[in-house]
Image (cartoon, rainbow over all chains, first blue to last red; front, side):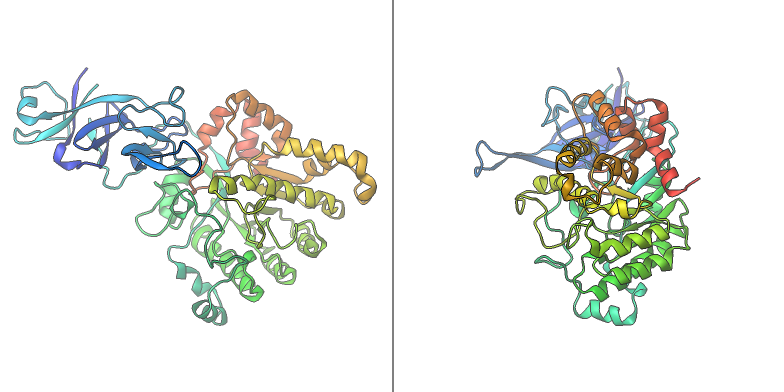
Amino acid sequence: MDRHVVAKVADVPPGDRKLVTVKGRPIAVFNLKGEFFAIGDKCPHEAGSLCAGRIVGLAESDVPGDYRLTRAGEFIKCPWHGWEFDIRTGQSWCDPTGTRVRAYDAKIEPGAELNKGPYVAETFKVTVEDDYVVINL
Amino acid sequence: MSIVTAERPQAQRPQRQKLSVVDCDIHPGFSTPEEIHPFLPERWREHVKTFGGHYRQAFADTLSHPRMAPEVSRADAWPPKGPPGSDLEFMRAQHLDANGVAYGMLMPLNRGPGNQRNLGYGAALATAVNDWQIAKWVTPEPRLRASIVVTQEDPEAAIAEIEKRAGDERFAQIMLPPRSLEPLGRKRYWPIYEAAVAAKRPLALHVGGINGYPASAGGYPSYYIEEQHTNVQGMQALVTSLVLEGVFERFPQLRVVLVEGGIAWMPALKWRLDKHYKRLKAEVPHLKRLPSEYIHDHIWLTTQPLDEPDKDSDLAETFELVGCDRIMFSTDYPHWDFDDPRFVLSKLTLSPEKQQAILAGNAKALYGLK
């Protein structure tokens, strides 16, 4: 398992996302209120690029006429058919047991720490001053 | 490792096997609302600027229900400039090249000429949209084929438009909305069918049409998901009308393509119509054969939006019941409920020959494509 440096933390502000490729796999990286998460970019339904979708919450209701929006900003909605996935786990909202995209281990590491190595950042210059998003894969 | 920025998110396509499909439903768009104006005569340009269009519903130039996504489109289908479907280069890269589209049938819904209450404007708009398809799309991109858009409520104008385009092979079919003022089997529309037969073109009936009536037999739907489903009953009503009014008895050469209605509803309709016909045929003595026989001989269906039963084998059985020789692949690009050819393929547990017929062969035979 290698440590892949995929983004500078400052380049993916809270609420934003970034499409990266690690070992040939397209991966969608999200900044959720300062925490970073990464899930496979390909929607399991028809392979739409999740990264190109909207970040949404859930509209929930226990009975008709009673509505609430919950977990704002915690789901990515496929740009094609609107399948929603939990940014934290990759789990599908409408079919949580049968459908999920793979979640990857993403964390923030300071450049100073990274520079001790080893890490993979072929197209990326890592400096000691900055913080980076790292995917273990 | 490579870094791909998400500033302009775009679909990452996996490497895929070579495909060659005929896509029977592609929606071309105007880059700007005014893009069609140069194709209109001065008289109607002035009309548009002064009065605009006028449908049989409360709001001009809108759809009856709010859609799932802006412009009804995939969120990743917006070109650098203009709305989805309006940029040929972008369409080539994202769809025609990426999905192996050998031929694509244009289904222009723009401004709905057949829905316009002002028939003169509707007819002028139909002519303009037809010229625009050739100028903007088919001339620079020979994989695309145009549809002869007509105003069904003005059959004389529709016939003139069909005759005008009949000699141009780049027009593959004749397009009118299935939800017209009366069900399309009614005699008022027959002159259009006579012209279609003379022009040797199928009719393409793409779901929709604004006729002032609720889309549902139960009244106005509350939700988009509810309105979406009325496409099925709309298609059933359409087929029922065409068959029972005797359209196919009168025009044995007429061929009809139902676009964006899906397919799974068809077997049940055939069974029920045949059953009723055996008991009630005295009411429709102009029919000489079972309704299902007219349907099979005259009606082709496009796949999208493909039904998704839990078991793929149920879908394969449904294809067999509909008739694999009458089903043609379609994507609905760039709309949000787009079907990807490779995923449709993977769901089809049918023989390779039948898959090939559905993805390309049936459409090539129907439209006379090489």
